[in-house]
Image (cartoon, rainbow, N blue to C red; front, side, top):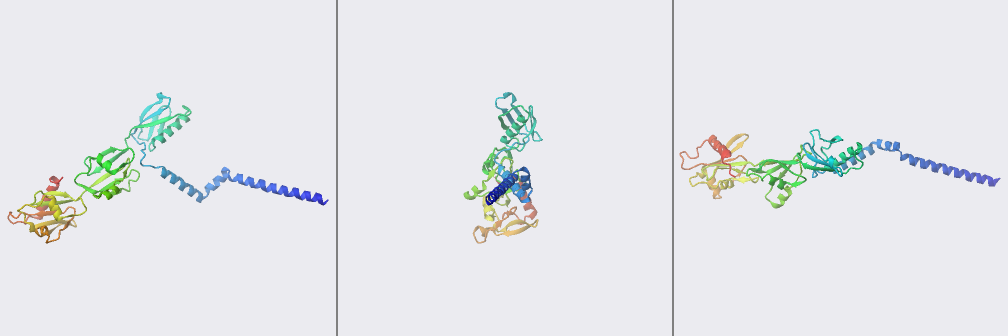
Length: 336
């Protein structure tokens, strides 16, 4: 009797263990079902993490150095082994290309590799090919130029495929003009609201730092340097660009090739606009040339006037006449 009870108890324990084992396996399988996955995706924290990961991947895929297709680009589409299907088409204003059999395919904003994939999917979905090997070749880029504007010799749009250095693109535009400033503004195609500013330098180390990458679709604007005008009894009345951030009176006089022997040095004047109103500042030019007076730093749009000592009432020339003379120099006599 006792032996039969022990056997019964042992069978009961085996049945209980089997039940829990089966139940555990069922729960484990249920976690892998689509409904369980949907529950995990409905969790806000998990969803935010998934979105963050996808955004990171998407941003990593954006490479401005790889040209993308745009409106007006001319492409050639070929299918290996089917020469009759070759087509040369332009991307339309709606961003589509219209191909034989499959019709419109949106490819604007895609690389050639992505366009090949889009066309392949349409050919397979239409039942025209089973495993087509599609080739997309860009014969003419209409939207991948770099616009170079401002103080360059040849402003215009220059075709650029892939990344190029800033100095290379400026060379395509013939280099900068003598009136070019040190500041260059670069507006990226993808971020037009946040232009990048680059300051050119005569120092070799700093110049390398300024030679940044330029990508298709960028716009480069070379600023105009501030001008300082030297008029009156000098060898060459000029409008002198301020190549550096600072320029002094004596440097400006040297750029005008010095004063004439008839100049009334100590009756010279500096005309400077203060709050929109021109002000006259005496310049002891004779003492400055002999290092008896400090050299004065100039600002953009300053006018240095050196009168002639041979004229009657030397140095009595009116302020308006001086400004008119400087204006004429700016229009006709800017020093190259």
